[in-house]
Image 1 (cartoon, one colour):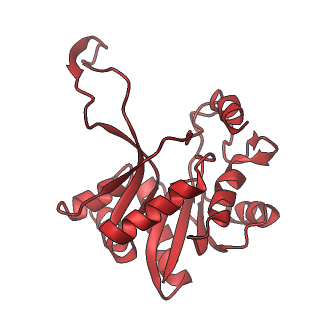
Image 2: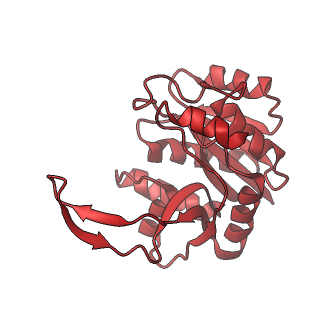
Length: 228
């Protein structure tokens, strides 16, 4: 049975001001770091990149130049993340006739650890659905539209979702397809699965290592410092 990793690289980098996926991070493009971790993970068999419009060839060359031998396909994504993932899932089912587990990872998370990827895969094999996540440790407040605090939020049992998120292939195929068919915008694949099957257990794999998502220009020097 095969495990396919979908690397989502179809964003516009609006908040960044420049393309974050090809930005230099310790001598390599951000996206290359993400791809290489999945390349070196023995539990991953194939990689599918979902690229922004007009960037398929650019990302294919980036992957090949970075030594990514597990690359199975580079496809064009959609206007929303959920549509990009749906296209990626459809391709993931095609690259191997025995695809059992599909992972979805943000290409802009270059620091993910290989053992965290493996833990997510094994948790999805056991539970059907899993996600890398981090316990919330900050004090949380809820505010009104004028940014005036209205109440405190108890942080017990609160988690920040990260990627990769891993699922039984048929479950993710059905859940992501249902979200697209119903024109529902979901921000992650766990939300799509919960919407499709509320009784499906989602196992959280606690992450204690750096997994920063590159979003703002200041994130790059932080990521490089964490790598060192």
